[in-house]
Image 1 (cartoon, rainbow, N blue to C red):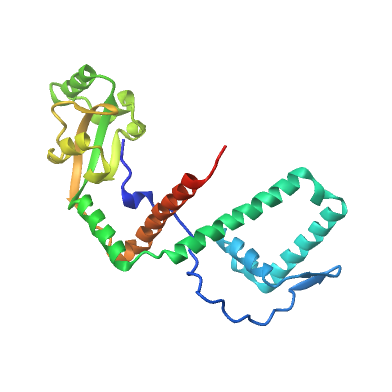
Image 2 (cartoon, rainbow, N blue to C red; image 1 turned 120 degrees about the horizontal axis):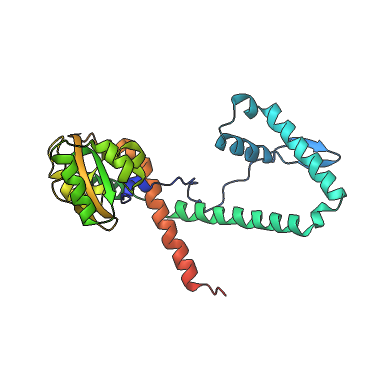
Length: 268
């Protein structure tokens, strides 16, 4: 039922610095991290192992030079064993290796594109200001019951507001078609901008503790709404959200980049 706001759709993306216009001076080649059966294991491989372990939240002991070197020796031994048995000629293994090569190249293209197209501070700040304005000044603790017809909703409102009033939470658990039914219809603290307009409009007109007197129609069905509480929104500062906004905008850049590539590609 909720719409996705810009700030709630944030995706992670690893970004490298932009490539320099001229290649840097070559640093002296490091000696191999190990030599296994006469095969040198390049020192740069240690970076790949370390980055992979960091991304998986490895313990500090798994990041020591000794641990990483030991892992690389094991991989080299196993890869040599596989080659001796002809596994490097296996069709499935060869396909997997080729796919990994393409995947790494694709990530390199992404990193280069993002590095060459940085997002300016003023653009990020403008997006933050826009999101803050859309969020509004208040957030609401709300429950709702979603049913399939207007008559069901009207009958429900009658039971909730007249005579021996039924309990909203119990009715939600029995009747609601929304995923929040198990929580008694509780949607938690929400922002109007995160909701479909019809629902948001009805919700913001309610007083604390009040149940809607008329069914609310949306694309999802008919809603009966109760406002449990409201409070002033403590919107995060720009510094706290800056990184998230940059990542979201980078994802938008990448989608446009890929769309441009697709537009000029011949795909059969």
